[in-house]
Image (cartoon, rainbow, N blue to C red; front, side, top):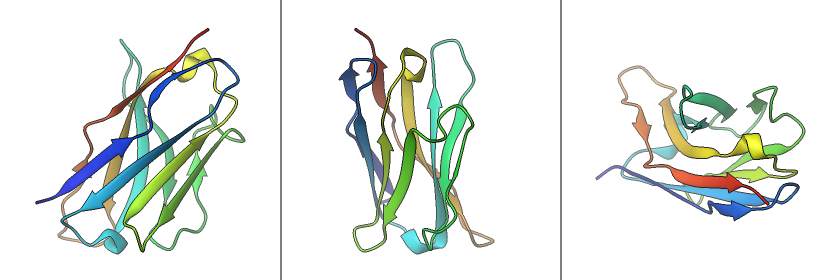
Length: 119
């Protein structure tokens, strides 16, 4: 059974930090590029960060560049999103997404974890 289980969300004050985790199971983790998306109330889902299977050359949305860091541990089948200097506009549900790097594989989504930045 395929699972992407996010954790680490919560309430944090502006300027604070959170670390999100996404534990994958049921598929070949190394065959997937991993992404974090977020969706704020009333807004479209937005791509936040991407990391390829080898863990090199991550990319970020301009809105989080310099504040967020995506990483992955292929031994633990887990992808992380370190979020620093959080702002109220970072408030959203954050989703983990497994994007297939090989033809014929299916994409997968996690259930999401809420991040609220507020004083």
